[in-house]
Structure formats: C-alpha cells, structure tokens
Image (cartoon, rainbow, N blue to C red):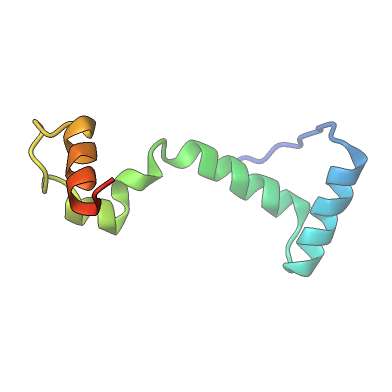
Length: 79
C-alpha cells in the first residue's frame, strides 16, 4: 500500500489535545488520523453488522409502524 504525506490546518488547542491523547494512549498522530480515515471509509452502516441487530432482524413484521410501537408503549406503561 502506497503512503502519502498529508498537511492539514487545525486549531492549536485541538492539536495540543490530540498530541496529549496520543502520548497518553501510546500512539502517534499519524496513527490516530489514519485509523479515523480508515474507519470513515470502511463501512457506511456499522450497526447493520452488530450482533444484536443481526439477532433482532426480522423479529417484527414489516407492517409494524412507529405509531404502532408508540401505542404499545402507552398501553404497557399507561402514559
């Protein structure tokens, strides 16, 4: 994988905070920015692969609306 140099302008206090964070977490600014950019482009909807979402997918009929759910909650909790 080819790497390239990146120049950015940020507020000085943000930069100092990021440097402090990197030191505290035993990493570099390059690694922080690289990881952030990787995650941005990796997967658009990361929740869709979450285990809880996978288990619950298809549990409710597609005919159920948000309003149906609100009515159910009102009946259950009496609000």
